[in-house]
Length: 192
Image (cartoon, rainbow, N blue to C red; front, side, top):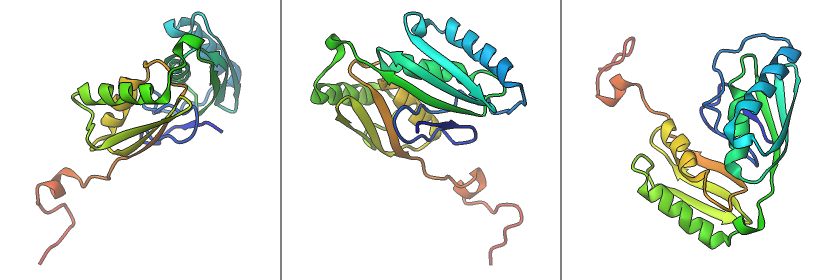
């Protein structure tokens, strides 16, 4: 089941999961009816969702989004809108992307477009990230140096035609803190 959790470092797996950097980091206890009211309001004001039927339901701070969109970018915008609401703990994204006929592209064409978008984006390490496409579902693999590069890679391709979903398998290595990177001794660490 597609899921976005608080506290994950922009990692997501499975269909329909968007990076969650847009979720409020501070969890506030609120009543479900308040969260639902605010989530519906956020969805209503999201420009990419004006001609789309996306609904929200809330139980114990878990927002479930369902409905249909005509592109992946709108689906992602719905999850981001719901993630802006205070009190949301988790977002279950059950939105289906139903591409119009004119946006149904051959997977090879989508892959070329993705490769070009990643290559021309200066922040994304395009030499370390690869994409495979099957039936409009994109799987990103490889390694990014920093978490923001993952978010940037997804932003760079989420607007492309023909994409139904993006599955992230990009790894971000855990960095040593700044003192370790510069070869200095960290507090409380002793070397002979």
